[in-house]
Length: 487
Image (tube, rainbow, N blue to C red; front, side, top):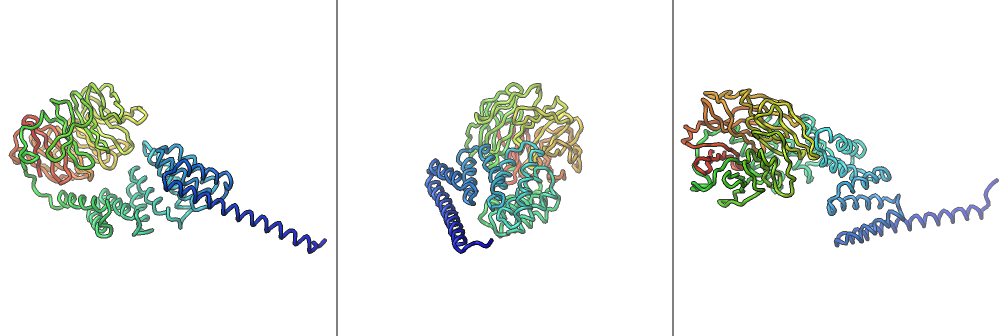
């Protein structure tokens, strides 16, 4: 039966009312979202969150609801420092607003949070899944480049260098001028170096300096180019520059441990004072806690000295809990890996102890360790006098490379007395035996530089070593209470 003209007119009127109401809802959703943004910009956080909450109640399916949820998640992360509170909000965006572009931002942020919470390589799986979903579902979204970059970081942490290199180069190709581009270039260069392509590494770092001269990555690239050229291409003979800082003699109280902080400051443990000190210019500043009989030291990312002794276990500042380490009679090394776990070695043990954030202890089978230092790839280099070899371990503690003591030296050595590394993976050691002096290896175990103490004109009791940011090797002479710089 055909509809009458009056019924048709009534139907159109009803439809017009619904369209009008829908438009009003859309306008109201946008107004609520903008109002929340205005409040948030003035740091009226409570008002902003309440306004966005009203938006979610009145227009839960609006695209502005997805944006509001994303802002609320970022608030939990940035202002409240509550990553756990941000995760369910981001999951809600995935569930309720998957077809909006803000779902890509939500998955990217969720992946970044999960990656930061990972404590071992297998913990990265869920984060990698989020990054891959951004790549697969949003191939034209601005978040794609950052997702590729984080896939590269995840592969790097897992020791998958070829895969990491591919992700970094893919990220760079997406937009060579973005804020992510210098980071991708920097990581590309580092992967090439790890894979043995030094010329390719130096070329990429130089391109980075030319294209992004004011970026933090360019500043770091300048230092890394200089160090790699000096250590691996020029290889000038080692020579002693004498007491360091220049002219300071008999000024320490039995220096026994050395380390270099991430910002380049040298940290000295003075045994007579039971205290670590940071060298700032020519002055010392006490750092960390009093620790008697400290046998090993590292420096955390925030500059806090990390000390290891038989009695106190691991000792650090108040922001790092003191973790007792049982059954250690001769500690020889300690550091914190990228997963925030502590690695501890002891010359009387046949294991390296990995103390996880939750306090659980894993044992990594190892020959007895005379000295140990961290590698930038997340693993460690250990010296085993019993096996007469250096072992380069991956981040799972498995041997990646073995270098026999004395390889390529004119005479062999028997013992490694101290060991340290720099952010490029160079390994410096004090050794004795038939060869007594200083040895420097590259990240792939190749001999780079060496000199005997006799050739350097040095006479003392050297028991600690570190590398400074200028390419020098700092030695602690405990018998003469001073530092010597070798360059």
